[in-house]
Amino acid sequence: MSSRTGTSGQGSNYEYVIARVRARSASLFDDDDYRKLVRMGTGEIARFMEETEYETEMNALGSRYDGVDLVEYALNRNLAKHFDDLLRWSEGALYDYIARYLRKFDVWNVKTVIRGLYSDAERTEVEDDLIRAGEFSDRRVEDLLNAGSIEEVVEQLDDTIFGETLAEAFEVYEESGVLVPLENALDHAFYDTLLSGLPDNPEIDSPTGLYVEFLETEVDFRNLRNALRLARSGTDIDPSEYFIEGGQLFDEQEVAQLSTNLDQLVSAVRESKYGEDLDQALSALEEADNLIDFERALDAALLEYADRLSNRYPLSVCPVLSYILKKEREVDNIRAIARGREAGLGPDEIEQELVIL
Image (cartoon, rainbow, N blue to C red):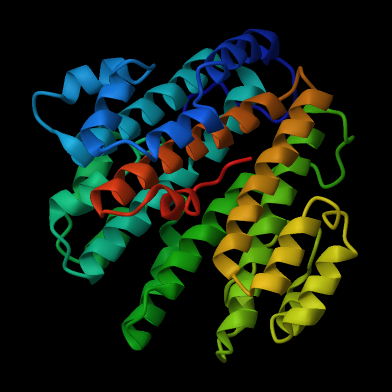
């Protein structure tokens, strides 16, 4: 990581970065674009993207790939380019905040490699799903792709923030044969590092305070998602294995208790500070009994929450974090559309897979 780090707002170039981010945000796909795309074939989707800000990536990769593969590679390369730009523009604490947050793509990539090894997937299939937008160098990502076993992946990450927790989880994995301990270890290491070294009670309208508020909300939503999955599964899995420290909505004991009773869990969320934001989603969950729709509603709610923070505090890290989430949503939506069309799904079926505000 660059030496341009810090834990206060001093030395940060918020005005410059936010001006650049707002310009980039203007080129993001809107809901009308998604509704056009779901009615296109894969070739039409590729041609549509060639006329958007994905033109550079589509042209660079067009001689080697076509169809969904071309779309996938262009999406991932474009995402990495935009997030690398954020780091290149940023200074001081702002750089530190962004770099910490973008490590979630390192988590994604390690999970993708581990799952590929676990399922004996082809290397090319694993590589297609990687998003090279985190802290890992291209060399490290290539080494992970070339690993011959999950144990080798764990050994390669010994010198990273994931090393210690991943090594401990590997011992559990060897006994159980399931990936959950490894994946949870990656999540815990990421969030622990994300929040480490930050003040416990920063002023809410300070740069650090706004950053912490956003992160606490994301942790709350992650814990809520995991609690709902456990409540629906009816399994005997220990909820503490999924609990992530750092949020405000639940503590570990509450999660353990509420994970066994869906009605109580929904009531607790309705009475929380997120109750109004998630009211429609909670109603849909109760009426439709559909966890997938609720999880999409959670994603949309986090987007809206980040957007409100960015509008309320326009010269802070919030507009940057909001942009990162929106760009992720764009890439996820386009990927879902391309894969859905290739699989022969209809427009209505695909739209159900999208996060549209």
